[in-house]
Image 1 (cartoon, one colour):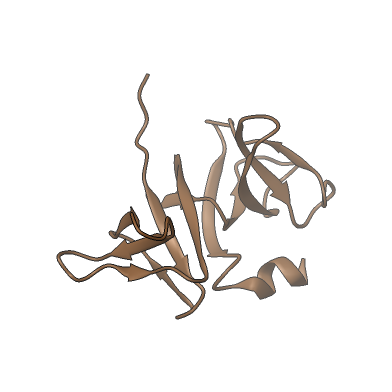
Image 2 (cartoon, helix red, strand yellow):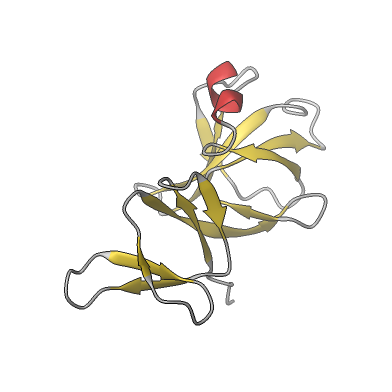
Length: 132
């Protein structure tokens, strides 16, 4: 089974999310750079690479690492906010509960029966994670 590998970039210097960019490693400095189209590459000073989880929300929008989604289709967790993360120790996608009865815990993000709705991400909407 193959899956689509793609990324978006949070540019902390400009405080904006960038998609559809090329990620390059400078041969002189070894530092990452991003390039949009045929423009000159620009260094990434305060950037975070965010990987596509392979899942889409109820509206067909791709879910990336760092997205905050509202869970649906489950009487126990419906309406709960979670943050999508990659667990190095588990080597898989997980979501960390921000609200609800399991707040502060995490579980596998393998529920193909579950529906998700993206409500923001931890970079552009930090208040969602902080308020939770």
